Length: 109
Length: 115
Image (cartoon, rainbow over all chains, first blue to last red):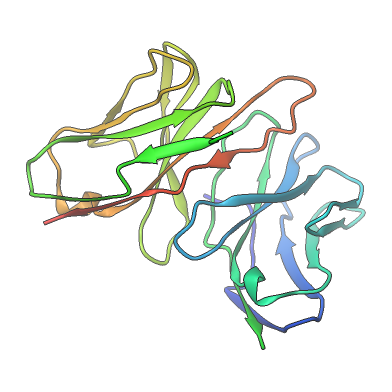
């Protein structure tokens, strides 16, 4: 079973920041938080990952709480092309990915 | 760089037929994976391989077989197709090692219907 809890769906207005929460209260010290997204009918795409510190790349920012029991993926300026299912995954570096149902993000024009 | 390539993109099978889903990657990744995704659900791991000659079962291996004779190829075999195997199948690969980010790269998927 997935080790994370995510809302089933969220809406965000185009041009605004999309903040996607994820709870992982049983995360262990060796486990990373990974985010992938799946645009309709395509294969999942890696977005970002982190262990303890906040991370930022060209796609998104990842904010991990100090106790590591939850995190937030931030898409700073959402566009219609960001409409997708977003998966939050907790795993050790070489471990298998266990996908949950993710959050279906709708970007509204 | 093609990445992960899956063929065919679509296929319709009759119950009891067999087929092989092809997956090849050109990134010299040692790890490869097969997932299935049923409508409205997340991906479930079928089989994976950590290198040529080594394979292992995932969450839902029943009804499938795999082989890994080369680093590049990881075919998935359905011997006796059943309607329950109607799904979208994704292949993925990743590298490993101390400096690797352990990012999985996915193919575009194969849509299979068993009627």
